[in-house]
Length: 239
Image (cartoon, one colour):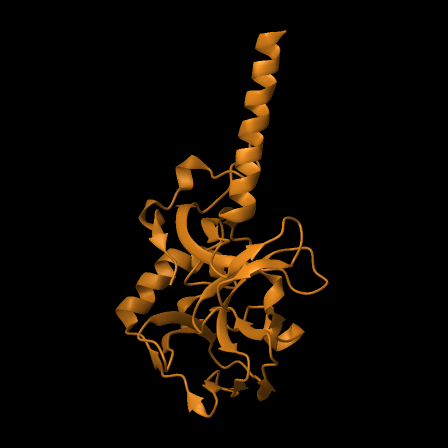
């Protein structure tokens, strides 16, 4: 009887520790779509830092303590209002910003255009080599470009479809909200469609890719096929 009680207490401790870590510190997340290509590929397994923006009361959106909102350029995981599924996108603008997106895909924040340059053919082919299967389109149909925040030095790669007709877009981000977009700009359901996101919907900041594979195992749904692991993406920092 005592041994059974010890076993049950040990099991309870392990479960409590696991749930506490997942609620408070880190949560795993698997990339389900190609909206963040080439930064993140389908079936990238990533960590999400849930302490990045504060600590919440369990099972609520109420903060115990807030550490500050996300900044432009950060990649975050969140749940849009009235949606049960988690999304991952890049913060393009923060509260008070005016966002303008031109038909050619150029993004302007508060009257300043984010510098956008097409990458060299060699680099474009390298990115396409990694993500071509996930894209489902040929290299000559896309531009792989580098976009730089005007208040940061970090560049990120984005994808724009060639000869894509786009409408002018303009909005001002309300207080307590952020504006998000996918790096695969013409294949991303984001703030251009469902509006700016209240910061209360944030889950955390994307951290690292700890596992990546081209295909999931047909025998074990949700797990990588070990024969298709992308070893070069292991422990990749998400920027």
